[in-house]
Amino acid sequence: MNKVVRGLVGLTEPLPEGPLLSRDLAPTPINDRTWSRWHIASLWVGMSVCIPTYMLAAAMIDAGMTWKESLLAILIGNAIVLVPMVINAHAGTRYGIPFPVYARAAYGYRGAHLPSLLRALVACGWFGIQTWIGGLAISALLGLLWPGWNGLGGSWTFMGYGFPHFAGFFIFWLVNLWFVWAGTESIKWMETVAAPFLILMGVALLGWAFNAVGGAGAILGSSTMATPVRALSTPRWLLVVFVPWVTAMVGYWATLSLNIPDFTRYARSQEDQISGQTLGLLTTMPLFAFIGVAVTSATVLLYGEAIWNPIDLVARLASEMGRPWLGALAMFAIVIATLSTNIAANVVAPANSFANVSPRRITFRLGGLITGILGIVIMPWRLLDMYQTWLISYSGLLGAVGGVIVCDYLVLRRCDLELADLYRKDGLYGYTGGVNRRAVLATLGGITVALAGTIHPSVGFLFHGAWFTAAGASFILYYLLMRLADRPAIA
Image (cartoon, rainbow, N blue to C red; front, top):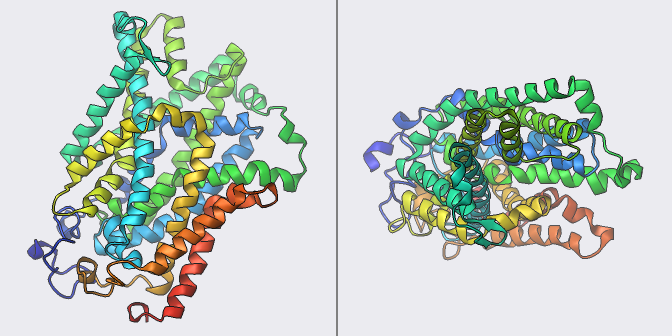
């Protein structure tokens, strides 16, 4: 293994053989770093074009925001989260390491399990949600192609869903695991092929909406709702409505802002990862969110109700038009969109995190299987009932981790790591028994500050902006603790 990784940045000696090193966690060899800016941008296109993105702006409209305000919140949130995204991605590209190994620099080789598993558990929740959504699309697709599918299982239901729903969920679950078994090159191929196809399908859906109601003016005019929040003063509105949704938007990608090294370790250069991420994230997400606003607003005008879920909308259109093949094609596009998002955003990270717990025993494939099992146990259909609360809550957890890691890599170490020591128990990052207690304390401090916002309305802004307060508090606390400690590793 050492023969293929010699010559990497930060590697002045062969990697030490031991329990902290495995083939999945070893630095990516230079020859295997083949992802260009298009591959990185396509990755973000594939992750952004999905049903949760589609419904995000529609939920903001339902909360009383105009279409301009909702898209502004999404753009601001993406621009903010892009900063830690690029910083953490830098480590992946420079050293070729995945997130669990990268986290060892700040937390220690044992302490890294804390941020790694926190990120993994959140990803398992998202994996379950996306798999459930994709399963519903598969069930609807099969129902269009074979009407008898919808009658399978008779009247049996579980938590409000019948046999076809759970069968579609299991089928889509198996498809996801196949890509995990096939490895990262299959993910790169899927993202590259799916990206342009998904954008075209979204534009086609937008075209239908404009044509059906008589133009963009009618649609966008209908997206301004008269709700009680519109009567709030500007400062109060910002605190109660706008900031929480910006936080939710940051929380949407808070997971990827941590484990982005899992992908950028395959990038050809820093220029590729920076330009690819900027191009993919700041354009695709607002575009597809706009499609969600426009199409959902069109359904209000046409049907008198907001149909936020494109699966329900496509099934209805196919039935009205008497063209099941058209509905089947659209369902197939939804399945591809959900699959590309799920594999990239919600499988790679937890698979690497679980592998990091026991590198010798748990491979990337086994870690992916563990992710899949937890994605079922977590009952994802329940998480969909608490969308904004889910986003804000875990953004505080991951924001606290992000504050520590960014402070450690960018400010204290100035992007300079000793690569071999990341795989050595007695190296610079060994700390006390493999745990940097200051990083753990700073993380818990950041989480506590965010949760304090739930105690009383007067400090509610701490929770409404959970990612910001948790990240800021953990960043400052970690910096002070490490400087007071005056550790040689950061001198």
